[in-house]
Image 1 (cartoon, rainbow, N blue to C red):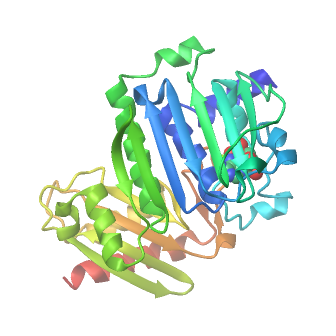
Image 2: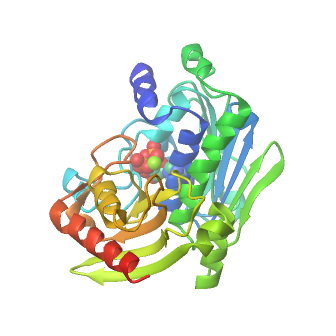
Length: 326
Ligand code: ADP
Ligand code: MG
């Protein structure tokens, strides 16, 4: 199982930012309202993600670290219409196969009911022991790739790894405005975002994560038709310093990169953008989970729409109309 886990780790764990993505997705799936992330040395030395979600009970702890153990789907047919971010049951096993992992969790509001397990370079190693922790879960990942030197060599400088982490953080924080977030690196705060309870607070978060310039030159949209809803911010051609990387597209809360989506957006912008400018946007598409397949790739960045044509035309016409009205 160790080898299989390490192979799986190659697919989902590329660098510290991918560990953070997986741990945070678990926190979101657990219903957390507050997620705190801490790193040392760009995440190569330490990554800690702490949430206040529903926690993992004593008996489920050994399972959480073993491969293909997921609590999120019970049968293959559940995969259709899956609403959780995770469902493959691979992440924790994969991460623990290439690091020193420590997990604390508590399903109660009573710190004496909390438990700890550890794993080091393989499936769970220690027994489940009591340890104090408030309701929720903390996962600490130390010395990433300590036992796979070839992979460790691929880690870049602290600054580069932190940049990757910040990009992942941005996506995650943009995906859930109702969650409060913090990111610390080498004991210093990088981001501190309270949960957003109003539209103004939401715009404040956009400004914090993407800059005032983005917000000032963006149009807020919210369009609904034929069971599809598209909302968010589209950058206007007035945004002369638009960065090509400010393109965020979420499908049912999951950040995705998709050819069909990219094409529809590009087409919609074609008439309004001057040559060489980049469309920038933060867009949220919501649709019935049953008509979108998210189990296309282990990183789950790709999706397949049951009716691609319908989605493409809805995106194009919504955006085209919004941009033409300006
Ligand atoms: P998946 O997310 O695909 O189910 P993971 O390996 O990421 O697989 O996690 C394994 C299981 O551990 C999850 O199905 C869940 O039951 C539990 N788990 C992991 N992280 C958390 C967390 N932060 N809070 C609650 N449960 C968690
Ligand atoms: Mg997961």
